[in-house]
Length: 210
Image (cartoon, rainbow, N blue to C red; front, side, top):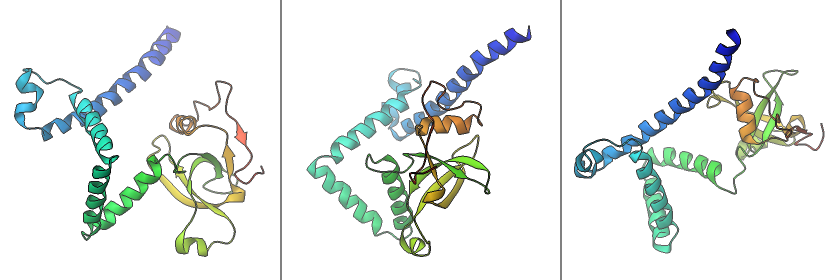
């Protein structure tokens, strides 16, 4: 009896949680429909609310924005928009910081969160998985002796919270696993090991050593 119960749980729990997360995402995106005039909402021309229309609207808006922004006139408008926002006090500091972070994370040339690392945390002798976010810059770099890297140490099981630390490159081990594999390992609290499909492992070192 216990065996069958556990087997049933292992089948249903991942499915239910996946559907629950998808529902949260769809419900949140459906709120974008409130930006439309009432006459254009599905309740008026279909007589009912159609779940997921907000997702479609969001995707269409993103694609249209990307198409417009990549031509000459659109690029000029985007540049003008950036200039306006940079001239508004308070808004300037918030917008500039968020834009720099988003450009780093989503740009194809960015290096943030491109590598999973093994670092000693929270003390020597204890190890955890972290992500490379870049290198120290500005006045911070001038106070550090030797080569350092900027690292994000996520918490588990919620990796959106964590710590930003600067670690000597010689003390960092670069892992031969994808960011997705590392995130699964962190979220599962070590239950789902990386490389279970025969891949993965450790590449000694971000410093070329181990």
